[in-house]
Image 1 (cartoon, rainbow, N blue to C red):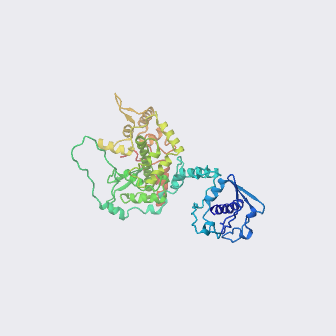
Image 2 (cartoon, helix red, strand yellow):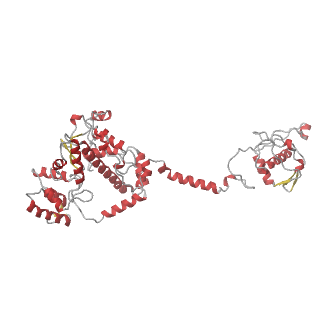
Image 3 (tube, rainbow, N blue to C red):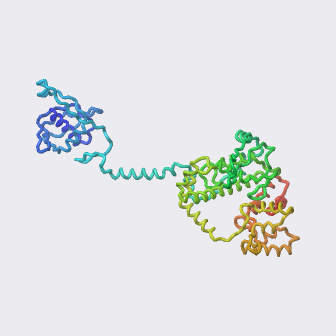
Length: 508
């Protein structure tokens, strides 16, 4: 009886394989003892196949499915029968009584393994291990696409700045702070809640000294100037295109700008000029909780100077961290991602910067710039201090005012075994020419005018040889300042405004 049930299941399954539209499962099996088996192959005469009304029905639509034609013979190998029976679900019991049941003897139980429906492709005949099937080409292509997507997912799902920046992009501020009313009105405001908590917290952490150590300690982490009430803030005075001085004197102006810019970094931006206007307004608001614009200073001019200082400070910070990490961790930017610097509050922004720095175009530009600096001519020995700061220091050392030649020599002369000499031939020739002109026209023209004649004026960037651009106002910005002064006071002419614009790049 067990063999009859197996053979009936084979017949039902065979009809399903013959007609690919079969989606249901047989509801009734008619036992037929006319199966004949020869040498492991089963021959199923279709004369014994039930008539059309007993054919399997679709459980969803209720329609009768097609069955093989009368007289057609279907041959199946024993291996196929085993695979088909192994996949078949248990069939409902039949109404045919066996000889054992008639004698009252219990029929031995037959275990038919159950299998869950699977969307995977069917195996070949004779395959017993489904885990070793060869994947189709379509499946392999899908897996390759998935692996590529996983590789690029970090960049595709990252900050928009990573997608827009190819490593060589140079961006200008689309909207400067001078055009933003919110930035213009940020001066002389009362302390906000965050700045108020910072001003009240005056506790400082001190190191416990157990004993004198032979190891030299560094100066520690730089701190910005604390927020203060409006009447306690130093007044800022414009010195040049990218420099302030203050009253009373404060030496933390650039440090405060740099720290605030890094702390408020809105995303993985390589330069300050890429910052959105909202982030730059937030930075200048925090800055003006610590300082205030000087009396009589043009607010728009002060905002321009602030943005130039912030741009240079942010650029120097990025350059410094890349140099430090290259020495410490090597050139692999993937290693850098696990060690964000202290000033970075958002780790994802740091990882985005590492992605941008690892791009081919950025690496090419960095290599070119690095090679251009190797073996070049020494241009000055001034360091990061501006000509205005050098003039201040010289004046404090001598106790009197200093002129253009003293400041230039301080910035362009180096020690030699015999005496001080100029760092290069060009600096020496320009100073000799300046001294000749001063002996002839010194009573008529100022030192600044004579120097401009010597060096043929500014270069294309607005820089003046020997005195860079931070502590002086370039020609373009002089015209802009004159225009701003005229618009603010219609009674003043542009000529008078330009005449009153004193040059300060050698004045302490």
